[in-house]
Amino acid sequence: MKICIVGAGAIGGYLGAKLALVGETVTLIARGSHLEAIQKDGLKLVMTDGSSQVVRPALATSNIQEAGQQDVVILTVKAHSVPAIAPSLSTLYNPDTTVITAQNGIPWWYFHHHGGEYEGTRIQSVDPDGIVEAGIGVDRVIGCVVYPATEIIEPGVIKHIEGDRFTLGEIDGSKSDRIQLLAQTLKQAGFKAPIRNQIRTEIWIKLWGNVAFNPISALTSATLEDICRYPLTRELARQMMTEAQAIAEKLGIKFGITLEQRINGAENVGAHKTSMLQDIEAGRPTEIDAIVGAVAELGKLTQIPTPHIDAIFASVKLLEATKQKNNY
Image (cartoon, rainbow, N blue to C red; front, side, top):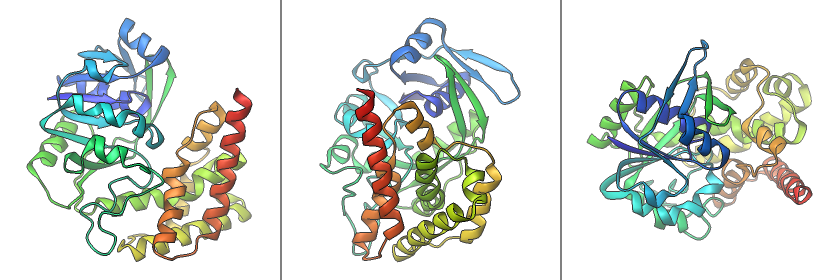
């Protein structure tokens, strides 16, 4: 298959490297020193056991228009970066190209093929002008929830820390031929790729923790275990997650675990810095709108109060704005 990874950073590069290793024709869209290193020396993947392999993709470029038509496009850029690239994605499409959305938070397509009173509602926090929907096209989308942890340890070098699961789901709940082919392709590359007929439930289970732990960590510089073991922040996380759960349940989501089990799961991850804290420390924009702002937006839509989520959202937005202002 011809597969284009748009955003070949830590997760995208990990995907692209393993797919290339089993013979798929992989194009990597990257930028900066990371791209230069890949072009010069290939992409090096360092596994958890210390072993490593170097792959040379079919193409590595910063220009999407150079890639040509693809069978599969995997979007691994962060949610706030999608609107800028969405208009150029059509150059990658043939009539049957599928687009895998692998962003954290509430996806722009959430209410498409959803059914019920909110069918077709646009999520303003992630696609305020409809640019993403217009550039990608709802019918091309397969949802994806990303579980692995990876990092770029130097330009052109990606380290796999843990996890290998990419959960997939058609947004209409069907088990289509295209999703089965995609799952098989990922499995051949060494990933777990379960297909879920309720992909929104899977999104919420991950988001349930992210909506609290990510912004609290960004504000406090604390790790997951620190947040969960300190009584005041554990209680704050519980309050935020309770608000999020009420929204999700209003939208028909059924959680298979308790709130306390979800918090304990985060605590067991240990001294891990969330991606949002890493972004704040690096002076990068965060995924605050997709992970927290979108949940607050859904609270207003469903008429469920979100006072704790709103307060933490405002605080991180100010922190982000202050950091960016001081960087210039």
